[in-house]
Length: 125
Image (cartoon, rainbow, N blue to C red):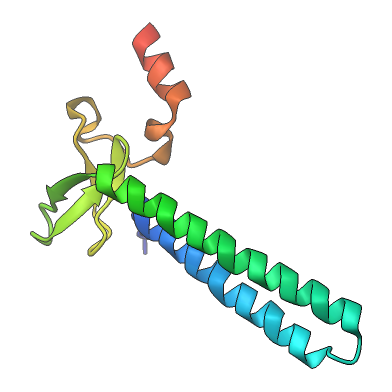
């Protein structure tokens, strides 16, 4: 049985990372409460937890601005609106690989197509 690859939207990947940062920061602050007898350790856990939560807010703002610049498209597979970042991306709903580049239609899905080094190597050809 062939293994089917499942792709994920870049926007969803970054949002998931930010959500993990929030929960990790809260867990660190909770660890700080558990170590309240050792004050310096408690303070370190609280500061690290707070920094992780603040960094997640920065990531959420950043992905929000990227999402505003993303190209809205309708997925041909599920007919739902989704947003594309880069030359290739995946549908946010059904994980269908998408591209708007006519040269990449029919090619195997690979995220290397979004890298600048790949674009430069294609221009040289």
